Image (cartoon, rainbow, N blue to C red):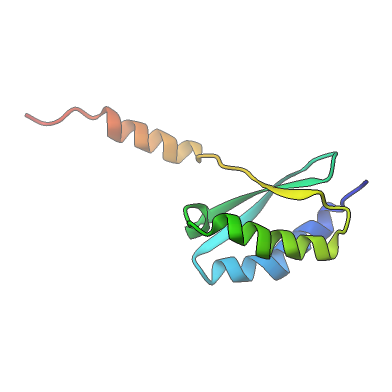
Length: 98
């Protein structure tokens, strides 16, 4: 079962991304697994949206399945940007001014 990365990226760019951008979010392709799963990362407003799971199922996975029937599923990747993590740690480590 081979999933074409170019097709997946095209679907994300043309069918999924415009919808997410209109809500202040975005998506990035992280990985295509050997067993047919697509790993994606939601960013911007989509990364913290309470409806993210619904978006993944009804928008992302639906669009990808239309283009790639062999798709087994979409897996969200939740990771914190290293720069953001370092900024947060600096903030938390600050000592209160007396």
